[in-house]
Image 1 (tube, chains in turn brown, yellow):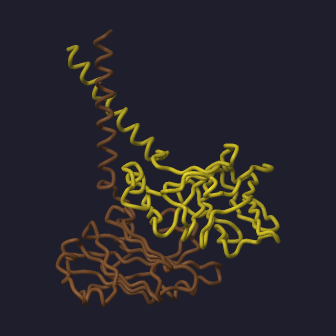
Image 2: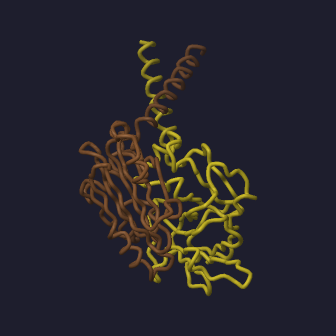
Length: 183
Length: 192
């Protein structure tokens, strides 16, 4: 009897280890995460508009249908990324995701405070190589450090009414995401 | 022989317990750091690097991109205030106050996060298009058949979820109580 209980106790402990390790491995093992879904639809280091979600077809689950969205799938191995996103009339935001869909930075139009959101995205190593001095301060550009070499930049513009969707899409069409040196 | 039988039994039971617990937690969700107000639940940390391992696993499985903390916060509801599951064949009303936010959107999805087909091609409302009374209050009827005022069609599906997204809002990781974030009430009306 006691022996059987010991076996069961061992199974519960081992089960706990199995549970914790599968939860931790899941983000690396997932084959249908957001990055994998966007991979065939997006060229690297370029901003492309995403198709609006419909009842029949949605690139990702839980997309907000009131927003126009564009994605830049980035790879920082060739250099830092320059992002320039003009603001739409209503509400615009930029969110940065790691390769595993962790949102590590997000900023909206009001926080950006100008007529366009301008950011430099780089790895911590590339950031360390940026020469410090007056130039950087004068440029007054926001520098974001990416925890991973690859990831996603998602630009969203709100259409407060369905009739304004074309306006939101036009605003996103002018957004740029490209490799460029930091001045 | 006994040892072999015992260890086989242990390993099988361990795999069942471990994988079963993983499946349950990532499909149902675990309430680590979640903020519940009425029928609405948000997980503000899911939009930051402080996201817990369970939410990370869930997001990897579903393929969604969570709303970033600097962008907004998303509240999910699966039941009304009394705990009745949403049923697309019934009428549910949503009314009352919304927390401070520059914009909000309300969207209806099926349990897998897809939009639901309906005759008027409406999947939700934004704060700019909702019809309010003279005191600024609003009522949204989530119902299978057309209603006057703010009608959100269910398409007649059995189960659905509602997502209330607040954009540019002070609601977030530091929010604790319903006083800071008054969320609209949800009530079940007639079922057809």
